[in-house]
Image (cartoon, rainbow, N blue to C red; front, side):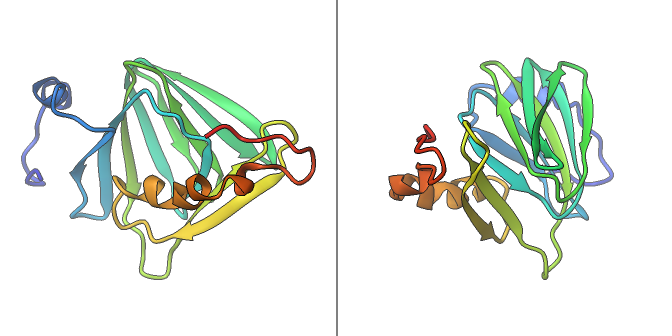
Amino acid sequence: MFPHLKGFNLHQWINDNRNNWGQRRVIWEDSDFIAFVTRGPNRRKDFHINPGDEIFYQLEGELNLHYLSNGKPELAMLKAGDLFLMPGKVPHSPRRSEGSWTFVVERIRRQDEIDRFIWLCEQCQTKLYETDIRFDDPSDAVRKASEAMRRDKNLATCESCDAVLEL
């Protein structure tokens, strides 16, 4: 973790750690905010419903930020240098391409706040599955939320149109 009153060069930090990286690396989480850098590619199909706002700053590559607006699918395509504010409670699914690096800032959850993850049929938008999870560690939350979907393939089959969501 970095001291709050000491600046650092984010691009240099990424370059220094580029070969020693997983999917996501937390920069800090010991303030009112969690800040992390995540890289692509990823294969997310879930939509995350964060109780608070989330800021995406695209550092390198491209991010396809799928989200639902009044229940209808929308897409924000972020390229290097683009900044995007995702309002709280809006279902969104950040899908990163190879070589994509994104800086994300969101606030620490209050004790009474729970994040929700949902999966939708890609054919007819019917909700396939949803789960609530305590978002204490951004490096672990998506994996925990996705465990049931991976264990039970029936959860990925749409009851309305029989399409199967490829995970």
